[in-house]
Image (cartoon, rainbow over the protein chains, first blue to last red):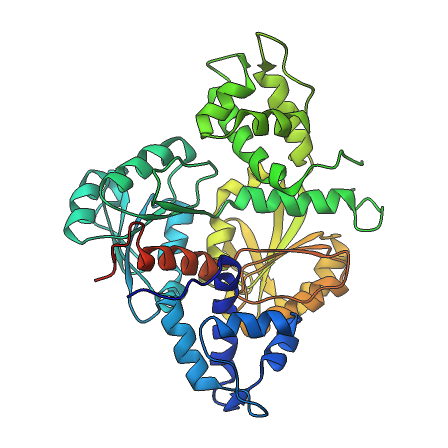
Length: 215
Length: 215
């Protein structure tokens, strides 16, 4: 199934619109791009463009049908098809992600987690089994896993990444604070918590109006 | 304490360099920008520029002193000063972040978490107390909290954001899948897990070489 070429920046906003539409669908049946733009303090030309990438344009006066738009957003985001996913590294952060029930709504299905700590093998977190890391390749190939989540310590991240790529995984969600090297065609999305914090703390140190917010 | 104006893109890479340098500091005493660039598959002009923003240039032949560079990176990232932080919303994701020991290294100190669920009040997660959300304002003002982490359900995110801003918080780390409206001078860093997944899953659906990876 080929889809229209949706820009990355639009793609980042689509789940936000979808979440909002789901929250209002029982109350209203139609909505305009302008109303959505106002809700999020966005430019309405931008919202119109974003929605245009997944839907037609809204009808004059009535705008978009909320239920139709929800269906179109879900289709564009692939929420109907569950992407088979595994997670490697069942430490604090890994367990947190395994317990996070929100992912079920986001089109991924975490089949299993892997760890090198024998004490964890055979246990379940968030209903997902934690398996020995030596079984990684067998499970990935057998279950045709497509997405890998890396939550191992940084010193093991590249090795795990290489193993995932060797099993045919083409998309990696990386939580280790490092830069992974991958062959062409493999996509890495970095969720670097340290980097996010660095930016926020820098903003605080600099102050927003020349004031020094640190004691 | 005013600092040199470090570009955001550089700031995102600094924690990565720092983590790497800490992992090798017991083995080697000097390192070149080229060696760091090779480690991460980055352009060495880029690495030289990044390091130049926090340090002088490396010495010819010997490069940078690893321990000096670590100290300079830590100072630039503000890891010496702990930014007082609170978290609002002690659901699965909130608890996960509270349990994540890594933050202690990243220059933030989570003082407390808040939730509207009375069953959680007075309990501890990761050593941090969970307090009634009605105490939010009092604690923020009393403890001079500077950074707020939002992990509440999306429908409460804007309200919590407004309350944090009203208490003088100037930096918000937002995990709710929405776009927060804040006054000028307040910085929001979004960690939208749904958006990251949307991008990865889109890549998988499109295939890297025209192949369809979804069953």
